[in-house]
Image (cartoon, rainbow, N blue to C red; front, side, top):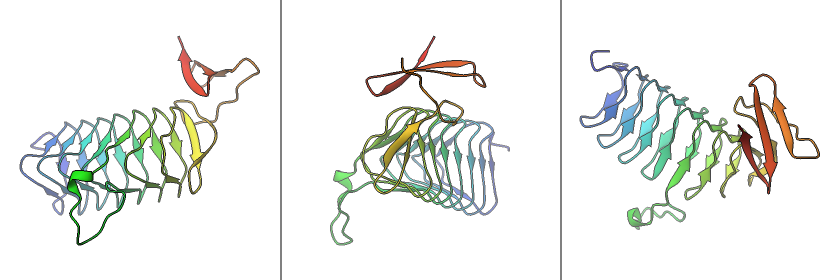
Amino acid sequence: MENGYFAHQSAFVDEGAKIGLGTRIWHFCHIMPKSVIGAGCNLGQNVFIDNGVTVGSGVKIQNNVSLYNGVEVEDDVFLGPSVVFTNVINPRSFIERKSEFRPTLIRKGATIGANATIICGVEIGEYALVGAGTVVNKNISAYALVVGNPAHQIGWVGRNGKRLSFDQNGSAFSEEEGLHYQLENNAVRIVE
């Protein structure tokens, strides 16, 4: 940890990459020179971080995930094994479409389950939970629980990832977290 982070000897961290304190980069990862990774992250085996990608602090990226140019990941996000991100809607090997990259934003605390596919140009809201194998092709609301192909919402989750049960007034209380959630106009917020 002479640089303030750990990189396994088989990992490639290109000069110019910015990596936060306490981050761990494991076997066969490749971190490109114009990427930024926050503090306290954990990158599993065979993770690729492209130029122009920003990863917040406290992020866990499991094995075999590639974050391509146009993807932004905020703090405390969990990306399960083999999650797939895209950055062009209609790729062709013989047509360069770098000017058509669509940004993808994963908000603070969101979880994306194993083998999910995230089509470019979407935003996944804070603390949303995307089930394993889900194909996301539209924006996902904060605290939403989505599954399927294409993704469809089946409920709401709290910050701890557990399902919320709202009463007739749109109120839910998580004793475990000590938080009160309010559902109004198909959006969840925390009541202070």
